[in-house]
Image (cartoon, rainbow, N blue to C red; front, top):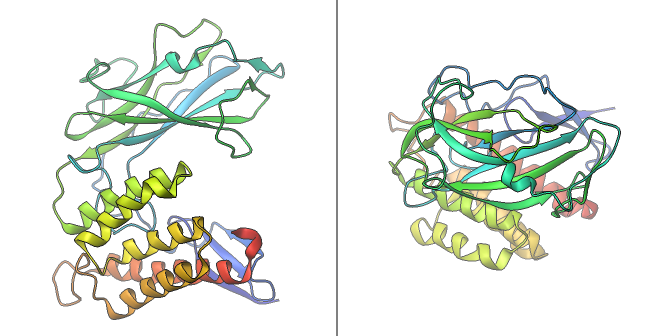
Length: 317
């Protein structure tokens, strides 16, 4: 049986596709292909949450790094362009007894706070917190992927409360999710944090990543119509945007426009082949390095695989 190595997702995760069945995928987590994060400045290890002290608890993680299809070495959260940081708060019921939360305001049990990098967030004083730091619940995600607030937390199932956090201080700090005075005695908020970067755009790629991330956020809400203006922003500032064409393919995918999907993916491959995207450094520029080349091969593989799936695997659409 033959297998073909291709790339999907981030760095340490790759996929092997069976040549005799292109829609059957096996996970291969032993073959790093493109490490999206290796270029980032090294910081002290973020605050690691302790083990839960109770059977019903939550922890969280912050998403402030570029997704795999965005321009490398550029940030997605940029002052004045995209000042929202995504946080995933995971609720876990490790007790075999289901927990009914229909009458519980669990959303009031947490809040975001900003700390210096290296601070232990359970002991240090916050640099910023609500009301100066703003936040809201964007949506809940059930274990089956449906966006809906759960009525009951079942045993050992993950329920995700997705937060938008904004008006954080400009710079490089820790964003933490901590418990409030509303937390009941039988529930445990495991404080956790991650580093964020909120800086002005320093390049065209920074700005395009910011708009692309907003586009992805609205698309994840299931509203392609509201996402379309952000896609227009990408092409208004860069008509040859590799990332823009990739996002456009996902837009047409959501709208079930097969011609648009295929032509957009073809445009991604054309941009990579010609290397004529002004947001990417010319191969003779000193800023062109192995990361750009790795990203090129990564995007070629990712695009070809998604195109193959779209054409040959309608059950994946």
